[in-house]
Length: 196
Image (cartoon, rainbow, N blue to C red; front, top):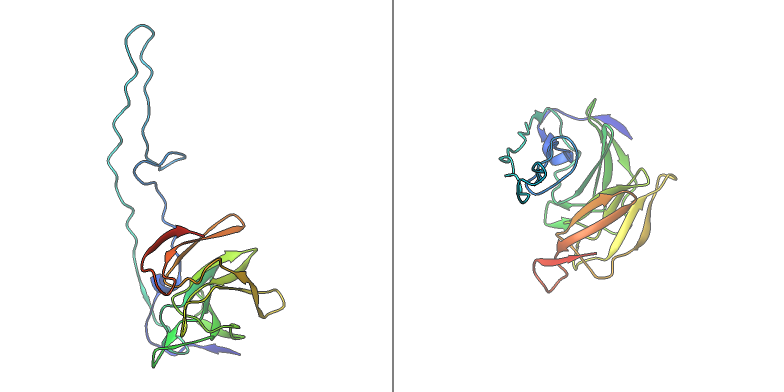
């Protein structure tokens, strides 16, 4: 189903992961990054001393409300951006119910397309892109979940595997073709500090 969204407001920052340029204190690397440097004195002039780090200056991000309305009010969902399309999957809907609903939102036009439902309804999930496809990691419904659900090229969600332990309220990050789960809640321990 393909439809035009009715006017309302959706915050772009809630739909898109923003890649903010620049570095952070203590990092090293390419342009725009900060880090310690060592200066080499002329031979025989004494020991080498580290140069002071330049002051950290955060990058400003502008948030703009867009005149679009989602098909239903949802929070604590996965929002995974691939180009100009955001896949929104799972989340918490009215009545504190976990949902399996998924759809794609085209950021260039505001059009939304329904996707098949997730196999397991979840909220408080992580979302990443692996192999060019959205992946929904963990989450909770009546209890915390271990599921890793991926959208396949066949147009359906599939169970890709399970986390070593149940996890909701997590952070998922992608590095190359791998996803890492940081922290979260396992149903009994609050604010876990491990990485899966």
